[in-house]
Image (tube, rainbow, N blue to C red):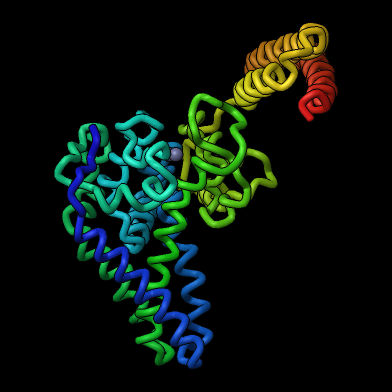
Length: 375
Ligand SMILES: [Zn+2]
Ligand SMILES: [Zn+2]
């Protein structure tokens, strides 16, 4: 359901304007008069990172999408740190975000980009009517005592985590006021617009790599200021994947944090979409783009694009089949190894592995040719 109205939400409006004016002008004035200690700026940087990643790794990928499971202590820390960003409770954030994914680009999308860049960025908050939220799509989250507690006491938790705690920390080196203005208010403004850019810029600038059926876009520049959420086209097509940037060099600190937590036993069940499925979606978009670009040259499409695409799809299917065969052979080998008959399975396993490597090599070569067509 649509959760905005024609009335101005004065609480949101005053808070957004006041934090922006006080935070930005206060940080500039205090810094220009040399009234902010370096420790305060260092802490502000660290706290921006901690609270920002609590939104992306916690509010977004853990709670709203359930793309992995976290140790209860990590879930608690993420819910508390995320509160410092003053973006609502997890239940409020989650219901809006699930509606965004379900109804993206329609009038039911809470931050519908078709209503304009600034509407998606901040305008929807000015017109937000919280009484219209029914929370029916976050029943699973409402079952969590932690999230019910955070929702019930959200204003107190947010003020403590967002303003009181940074002030107390900076008072340790005698910089309480600068701590409040810079690490408290200015940081809140930074966190706000970092998240808001995901709803505006990530639906406005960049490439539609995996689906052209919606406005979400991949943009490595926005990934830099959104803790890796800039690969938004991928995220909208595969929202269950704990990653947004899927290549190793994609800037996605949220993905690295979740992966790191899993390595020390604090996160688990990390959900990843099979790379071949991802590739099939990309090929489909590439093909549609090539057809649009070369629509006058039907010979090029019929003799080059379509046969190569069919060949690639065929190779992908072969790999999927061989990987399934390899998995069952590995399983059988373990059983036979236990029975002392390892050698019987070994040759079958080696043959399958050899075939898989050969097809993978052919796929890589064909992808080079495909990329050359796409230039
Ligand atoms: Zn989006
Ligand atoms: Zn999402």
